[in-house]
Length: 153
Image (cartoon, rainbow, N blue to C red; front, top):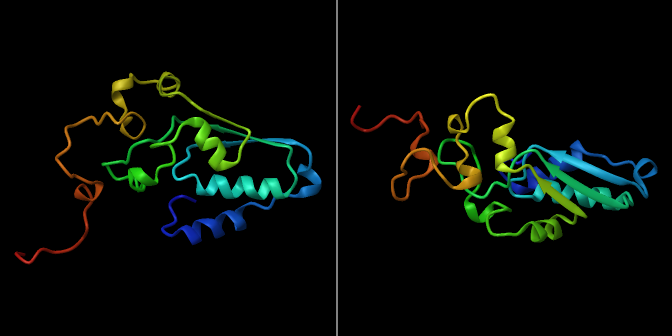
């Protein structure tokens, strides 16, 4: 749901997508598994819904490393300032999300799970190490085709 353009739409998507049943979840420990956490707002809203259902504990497991850097190559991530893991510690992220524990897959663990050598993958959004030298001030939209005709054509 992070791909929704406006925060209000992302919040509404969470409410429509998830409907925790208090009679099933009350006094239980819940483990949420997600592929990534970008801004954290979707996860935070989901945790809030679970807490309203009287869940005893909420644990989050993420099957990628923390996303700390924006993508220059077309993934529609927000600015680095909006990325939850950019300037926060794991403990600060746990507090922001309202969870009892948070564990990310390590970069090494993610790469070890692949059938190809690590240098076959771009890990810039995790490590900040881009596979090519970026121009000063370059952004992902430089690599996107806008479909607009230039005045010279």
